[in-house]
Amino acid sequence: MGTCCHLHLVGPLGFSLEEKQLKRAGLDYWPKLEWTYYENLAEWQEKTKNESRIFYLSKKGEHSLYDLESQPGDWFVFGKETKGLPEDLRVANKDRVFKLPFPGEVRSFNLANSVAMVLGEGLRQLSLASK
Image 1 (tube, rainbow, N blue to C red):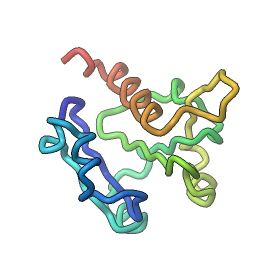
Image 2: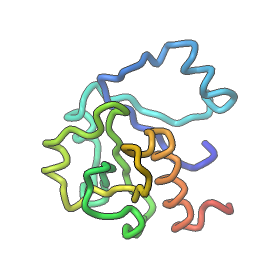
Image 3: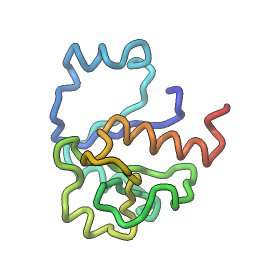
Image 4: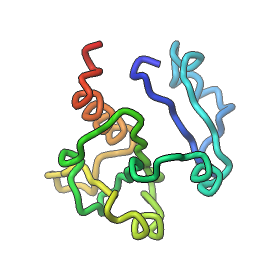
């Protein structure tokens, strides 16, 4: 796809991958998107190789995303729009939980904006945004 990234979706999802709206949201790039679906977190964790390069995003993180030095192959894990990451996952990986600094009075950025910001920062650091 345009960002050279692979999307990993971990179930259960709050939406169907068969929905007409989902494919419509993907517009002309949906057929070009590289993605993998996992039934659950355990299945996804079996497939990940370098746990030290998996980073979790949460408004409850202690570290700023902007303190992270991205590397090719990094994984960024986001929670559900409504609940965020499960607490046990955050606690077990607290040294790799990052937040997007948020100066406003509302709770946080929405999921789509958060993903875009994290991806943009990673591309900027790796100088891939201009290629």
